Every structure is written in structure tokens, then in C-alpha cells.
Length: 361
Ligand SMILES: Nc1nc2c(ncn2[C@@H]2O[C@H](COP(=O)(O)OP(=O)(O)OP(=O)(O)O)[C@@H](O)[C@H]2O)c(=O)[nH]1
Ligand SMILES: [Zn+2]
Image 1 (cartoon, rainbow, N blue to C red):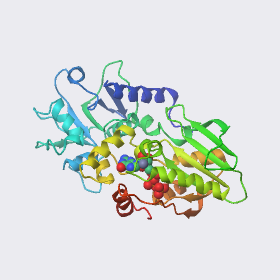
Image 2: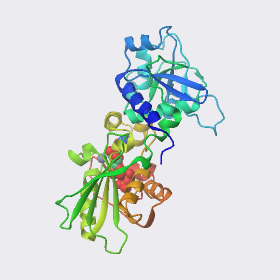
Image 3: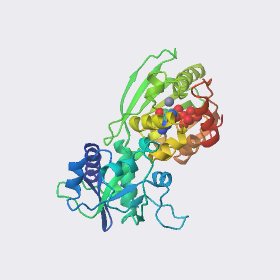
Image 4: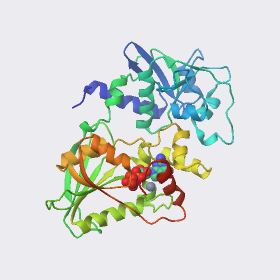
């Protein structure tokens, strides 16, 4: 179970809420603390309240720093948790926004030079980036050392890292759900963690027949699943997976609420805007300051364990899903290829999956 208590988790929840509203947050880490204000949700008044003396630095992710061609001075083997850009007189809200938001990279190229300095608290800085992802905002902050006000949410770095641990997930409800793809008995199971608003779902099609179930991990894609977007392959993959499982007569589709490979809908649409400028799906994520794939497949392993099916056949082309599930204790007896027909709009996306993220296509 969890390493952190209810009070810790409440502090993380309050911090996520505060970031989205443009309020400051303090992250505690053994003896050091960072006070943060998210750049995306800041405005002039909030920034003045955050730093009445006008003193602040800017904290960005290593991925964003690489795009900006900045890095903390460290041995190369020791990748920085985050990169802290020291304040210079002209680093105002507008310039900080340009540092944070790649939408303006082409129209307003960066002005420098910038100097970087030690983050002050590496664990807290790394936790800040995770908090941004949990809040669905750009991972970039105004930062000061030490205390905030007495009413400022103050989670520990450890509580932030533990916050979305798969062990918090429980089955909340199970019901019958006839679906167009299948004539077999189908159940829908909803999972919930007290911490997160998102509800993961499993469709259990057919009944155990002695063979390990055919399992598909599908990550949420609003644009592809609901609107029939042609930019990706999600819609046809979802439909194809349901039919494939139905043909087998027994299997499970996990619908994981990990929109945009874990960066959330708004950040995915920001990545799409960058793709409109010519960047591919990998570079768009990196320019935004995220990893290429921010999903944790431990959640899927936990769902399978709760359903009681930990020996499976996995429908995927993605080696990271195989590795992630195996690392979380799932026995994958077979990987089953999951191809769909390309279209003119997603042919480059599929080529990038093959060439840059190791998909077996
Ligand atoms: N950040 C980002 N996410 C995307 C983009 N295109 C699709 N996605 C997301 O990628 C996820 C789709 O992943 P999956 O269908 O699980 O496929 P996969 O990881 O490529 O692996 P397979 O099992 O081989 O299909 C969904 O969450 C989509 O929202 C993109 O350009 N940028
Ligand atoms: Zn998609």
C-alpha cells in the first residue's frame, strides 16, 4: 500500500488545484524547500504576490532545457532533475512565458543569454515537474527558495511521487454492457483511486476458456476515439481490438485514461499545434518539456490483478507496453501484432512510431 498518509495526499491534491488556479505551492524535501508558481497560470498580479521583492528564477524540465539549449553544469552521466534558469533583469512574465510555451518558439525565437544554477533541491524540482503533469499544465515555473505563506499547500516531494501509485486503485463498480463488437456477454468494470478524478475502465468480453485472455491496453485519445481523427491510429485500433477479442471469444480491453501518452488533452493539442508547424510526435512532446511517453503501465497491471488475470496474451506493437507490464508482474505468454490500415494523414505518425519509439510495425 501507500508510503504516504492521508494528510500528505491531501496536500498534493491541494497543490494540483493551486497550480491550475495560478496559486503558489511549496514542495518540501528533507531540509530544503522550493516555492513555485506555474508560469502557464500566472499573471502580473499573481507574480507580484509571489515575489514582492521581484526576485525569482525559472524552472523548466530537462527536455525543455535541451530545446532551449540550456543545461545545468553537471557531469553528463548525471542527468539533471530539472533546470533552473537564473533571473536576469529582462526575464519578465512575457519572456518567462516564451521560455515555457513552445507555441511561440518559431515566431519569437529565444533571447539570451541565460545562466543556469543548481536547482536548490533536486527532488523537489523533479516533483514539481510531476505535479505539472498531474495538473495538465506546462512544466515550467517561477521558483524561489524556501517558505511560502501559511496558507500555501505544502506537499512533500515523496508524497507527489507516490500520489498516483497503482496500488491506490480499487474496483468501484461492475455491470453488464452489451457492445456492438461482441455477441458474447460483456462486462464493464470501473476502477477508481481516491486521489484522481479520472476513472480507468475495463471491458471483459466473453468468459474464461482456459486460455490466457487476449488483452489490449488502449490509452484514451479523445480526438481519435470519439471524433474519428485521422492524425493517429487510435480509433481503428480501438475498434479492431474489440472485434479481435470478440472473435477470440474471451479477452479484456483496458481503457486507460492516459490521454496524449500521459500529458493530458490540452498538452496533446499543444503537441498537435507544434505538429502543424512541422515537428513530429516525439519532438513535439520534447519541445513542450515532457518525455516522449509519460504513461505508467503499472496501472494496467494493477487492473489486471484486480480482475484476477495476470497471465495474458497482449495485443500491441509497442515494446514499452510489454516491458512495463512484465516489470509490474504480468506474465505475457504471447505478443499479438495489432496492425491497422494507414491513411494519408497518419502515415508519418506511424513511421515515427516505427523509427523513433521502437514500435514493431
Ligand atoms: N502526446 C501525444 N500523444 C499522442 C499523439 N498521437 C496519439 N497520442 C496518444 O497516444 C496514445 C495512443 O497510444 P496507444 O493506442 O496505446 O498505442 P501505442 O502506445 O502506440 O502502442 P500500440 O499498442 O502498439 O498501439 C493515446 O493516449 C493518444 O492520445 C501525439 O501526437 N502526441
Ligand atoms: Zn489517437
